[in-house]
Length: 503
Image (cartoon, rainbow, N blue to C red; front, side, top):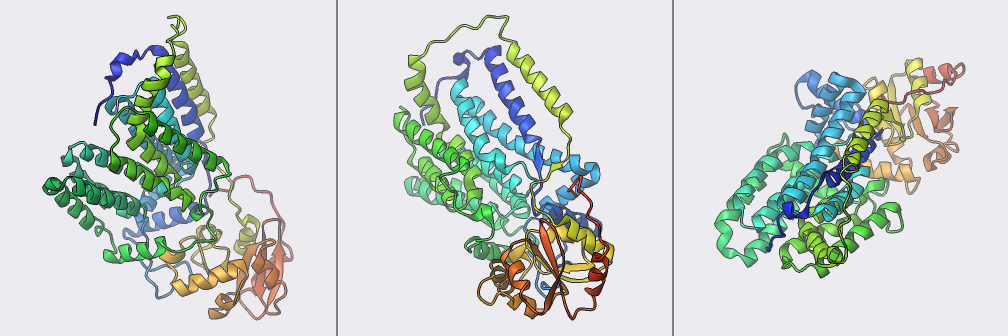
């Protein structure tokens, strides 16, 4: 592949560095904002359990419907890291973990753009900004997916270097995958892209099989370096191809949305650069970008992967297209020497103000049944509670294992497929919607106000409403002795305003 001119001839001045520093500072301050996620409470609880018991818990103690079913926790290592961060610094520890992983990803991409791809100032910052816009919205919550973004970037860089003939870097892939397979199920995306590249590369370069096949084969074996072995792979392949109509970020990216407009802008920039660029077009790398580029149209959660692939595979063409068109038509405006340090000073002020005023705590955007959970705790209730899956891990944190939930965000990882299918019918109030309530009758049901199951339970003779607020409605089974304490406490229960939702 033809190289761009060396970066040093692009006259990087203190002004350029300062402008980039200002951009970094603004985005860094934005990245300090941390939002709650429905699974946050569960990830933390399970990580603390693993640390306390010094083992990976494979039998779920928190649900009355998971008995006898092996818990395949494919995110156990991230949960342990979250537990350690919590023990060290509580909220701030979790936020710092998130910020570190996020900025390792963004920093790695930017380093490659300016030091290895050698882009000039404006296109380097433009490409990096595309990565930020496609990634940062998914990085404001503490989730195992954060490591997928980092390790996916590492994978694409290794593929890009191998395509340039540096095959030895492929031997890093077994190490990356051995970690990744225990951090998040997104390793399937990385292995999938590596597998496609291997097939296409060897088709065009069959004489290189000795350099490619051994490390890729060892990488495939590295996927077994997890507590569940092949069973994890079988499980993830089954769940990755299933429908998740109740989960927003597994839905196709709506093009008529802010994220959809960002997607269209990045894809348009890629098409423009690929067309204008005077560099030779590497069919393999551009094809891989196209493959990753359609993934957000399958699930919104893949948008960051597209942004990272754009930076790694298409950035040389963006730089070359910039030089071939825009830079030739523009003139450098000399910046007075006394003005050049101002952006650096501004970046420092932004950092000082942003870090100093950041509360280092979570902003709640998650609907949680705080009042109902408080009522259940004060009543001393111990028994079975069917609840909305998005609330399950919140209840596990506050009430488990004395209160066992009927469903939570772990879904197929801990619940048998037939039970999860019954829950989906219950969640949407369709078909045999109360089959899951008949399977193992819970003592109480906690669902969202105005939801389909709330409306149906209000008409059901076996259930009685004992509490309701703006978020939730709590029903008890009329013949449950365990639930009687809830009704007794509800008669004198007083609502108290919530100041801090997490934890």
